[in-house]
Image 1 (spheres, rainbow, N blue to C red):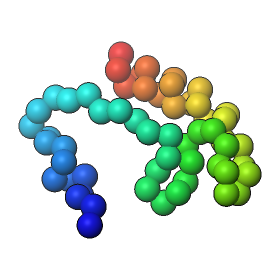
Image 2 (cartoon, rainbow, N blue to C red; image 1 turned 30 degrees about the vertical axis):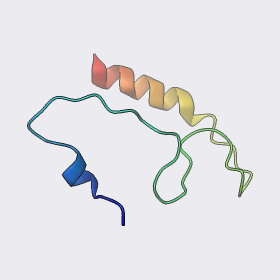
Image 3 (tube, one colour; image 1 turned 120 degrees about the vertical axis):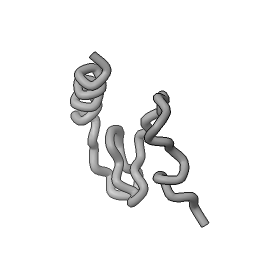
Image 4 (cartoon, rainbow, N blue to C red; image 1 turned 180 degrees about the horizontal axis):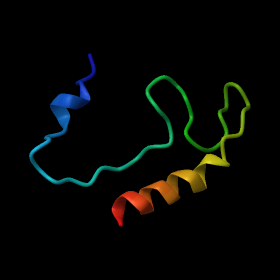
Length: 56
């Protein structure tokens, strides 16, 4: 059974976390979904822009 995120990440410490290209419910954030054939490549720049805003 998977470990819930709330037990993996501490609210009291600063950390760096790697964003993956696939979400839990098989929803692709960017790239091409091999099962559906949908192309989500347009989201890649949105994600990079948002990470830059949050980091700055």
